[in-house]
Length: 617
Image 1: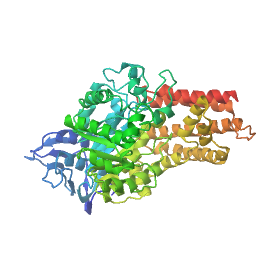
Image 2: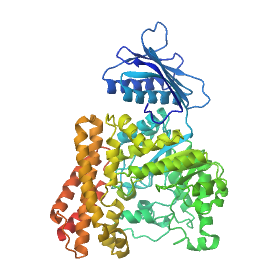
Image 3: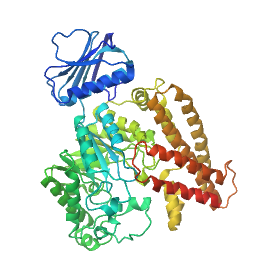
Image 4: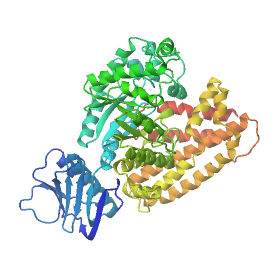
């Protein structure tokens, strides 16, 4: 059986249950709450996979025929569930409403695997890690539509993810920040509250997440709020993707900064039902290097950091919430964690495919009681997610999480440099995180990719995820380098240029362009056999694969010209310029299928710059 996450116990028995149009979904008489809604999810799954409708009823009086019974059971764990498939009936039991939902989710996946003939079996399951989350960046490039956010929540429920965070810096319509969102398409209070209610019904805790210390580029470079920035800013300076990642930390020496930060937190917090609030507080690169320099020299940079962080944590607690924060600053001096409120939660992130446990060991040794491990789906800096690195990072981080008995896992998807990758590409990594946080059992990479191909993408060949992975592996030029080269050229930063582009990469880039074309051809050959929804995903991968090749060609031509080389590549600058522009027109259509306008045109300026430079050759 291909179930994801892998259940703790599966016993297969002889025989099959025939799921036909005469089958009835029957709710136990005592079931209330969202049970009827969950029955509807199962009914819809049957319709989508098998093409017919079944009936839904409640109570067993005068009931005859084959049934799928939905029952409540007393369980030791809230999210425990069981499935009992016999020849004439299927019983789904949950230790709670969430457990019942997870039993239905597992049966939905069994239907995707076996269709109408479901093998008789007994499944007993419960999670190994209590908190299993996913964080999605909605602020640095893409602002998703509400419809797409609901699709993310649906996937969370299907794969038993019970927490969701939307990473946000500025892209909500704060009441007094019209200067910040006037040219954007921000999330609104109504959208947040509707999504919060939608998630709650699926037992997905929507945790508000707001940058409150570092990573406040759009906010702190504005005319309205520049006084709160650690460094002096030029409000008329052209926006920069690279600068957005490097600077713009709150000036803690400004007595008004605390009120400014906490008012934003309170306004945003009030929209959510969660008892948690992630204040972020990561990558405060500029702390002590500008307006707070004197304070940092007197007290020490880490002391200044922890003092402001504690004040924010105390504020969150005073509002009846539990604070979360990213642990990258704390881990440099882990003993200071004792100065924070005991209930606060440290989010220990690490994105390297070669995972170490050093930071987790430091935090645990320093007395941190509430820790999450936070891997990444490896979309940032790429046009196609690096699924190979994602598997290594997510499995390694979750393995350490089980070893150290952490409170939770928060798998992450970041939008560094405009979130150029298509958001659907995060699905593979999301499922990795769901599988390895729920269960400590290892599923090898080739095996889990087969399962995702079959269960998520309904691919009978079980190969499509490996092809997606191969497209990412054939990256012709890293997106971070592609953007950095442009912005370094504009600012005359020769050191940055030297770090990202080299004639020594010519052969590798040419080889990957060829590999990209070969792998794309393989995927084109599969299209006729894929489902309608998977065709759409596959075509998104194909479009982004073409984008990767064009980026590689553009860099080769520009580098060749800049170094005054005379190497022949088989493609011309004017042709690549036109191809980039035509490609971006198709990309914009893809963007709008899942995202608001947000920063799409800013990304367009990157490709337009390259097209112009190519025509200058």
